[in-house]
Image (tube, rainbow, N blue to C red; front, side, top):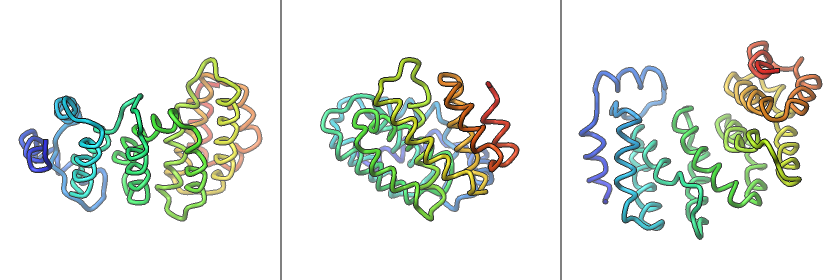
Length: 224
C-alpha cells in the first residue's frame, strides 16, 4: 500500500457534506474529505494486512504529512496496536506529531495509539512529563489524554499506583490553567479514575476542586 493508493481509497469514501460539517466543527485549517470513521477503520484494517511495522510507520508518516484530516486519523489508526515488537520507531513518530496537534479528534486518535506504547514501556513517561511544561496547549493536554489507561485498572500494581499519583500531580498543576480543553482533560482523567479509585479522585477534588471551573469540577465528580 502506497500513499497515493491510500488517499484514493479515502477519497472514494468521501462525503462532501460531511466534510463541510467537519471543517466547521473542528475549526482547524486543513482539507476535510468527510470520510466517516467506520470506513477509515475498515480501510486501515485492510492496509495493515501484510504490512510490517516499518511499512506501517512509513505509510503513517506519509499520510500525516498530507495534512488531510482523515489521512491523519488513518495514520494514527495504523499505529494503534497493543503489542508491537521493537516499537521505538512507532513511539518516535507518535511523539513527533504531538507538537503539531491543533484539534481534539486527531489528537485523541494519536493519543490512543501512544497510550499503548506507554503501557508497553512506562519509562517513556519521563518524556511525557516534559509535555506538561509546554506552552503549547495541545501538548499539555496530550499528557493527560495519553495516560488515561492508568485510570482504568481495577487491580493496579504498585508501579501503576505510583504512575496514577504522578499524573495526579500533573493534573494538580493544571487546575490553575483556565483554558477549556485543559480543564476538560483534567475532568476527564478524574472522572474516569473515580470509577476505579474513588478515594484518589475524591482526595484530588477536595484539594484542587475549588480551582477548577464549575463545569470541570462537576464532570470530574460525576460518579462520586
